[in-house]
Length: 450
Image (cartoon, rainbow, N blue to C red; front, side, top):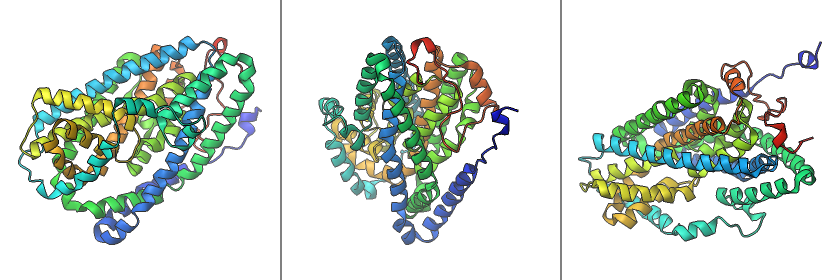
């Protein structure tokens, strides 16, 4: 009898965690509605949980990229994967922008609204956007103060930059870099283990966040803007299942419905925290488990979190049109294109930052149509609810991008993808590390890991 058959099966207790998250969200809604004072007081619980997750993002990205690039001998493969990924991200952002424009112009959800009483909330977002700087400030911010500061300052792009340097340096060292690569691999397992521990606090964070949102906005505020919210959610669904789903089925032969089912727990975690960053480590682990080579996952997923913001593109488009219509000063098609293209570019540097969507929205309006800036206050009340759809769409876009780039670069095991999505090879929820799966990369291109 083999070791695999004699080894006792570890029970997966994580399903209790996600049931607890659902219960916590429902409880948070009722507490925020019936006891708004208490609901506002526990809002920091949600902030603390998201901060715990963000604390681990830089180490996760660093380890993943270093392992992905450092293990590949041929730098040309990294360049090919990165080039295809960036080109795909640009095309998909444009498609998302166009879809948001079409839906916003057809529905005109802001027409006839009086938003003067909400104008006061826009000031802080305008100040936040003003401090963001221009293009050169954005490029300068990518370079960290020191090699280690990129891991401590919480900047995704700085971590990405340093990880690329370290990965290529290890790659150039050849067999001499093997001990460093193995050490990074062990650190990655440690990071994932810590994340597994943190995720057990998700119900507490979800309860605090939801209770605070309902207590602050009230159910009437949500009803007042229901058309915009529903339109945004439906637009995101059309984009994910209609655009991304059709593209993935035609290109890779993978069902979007099976992929969504495979990532169901990650989607639930994102909905409870309104942050796609909370599921980034799990997406990396699950994409590797599904059959995408580590080198591809290590490049596409972290890069996508900064440059593949499909949900944010749709949000910025529809929110801008909503504000312009609500203030009785709609945008022409020329103004729509120039303003929204500006905001899509500006949003790249603010990925994952709390309030980044509102800050980018305010910054774009201030630079192009200052008279519309006061309308940002209307979005404040429901931004949290819309951020959930934003984050889910961004997450789905990055998952699909990983599958597509893996298919285009022949760095995906199609047979394993089918087995995993058909639930024949379940993901190890206890560690988030697929340690029992052999390396699925081309051995001729890799530095031996052992």
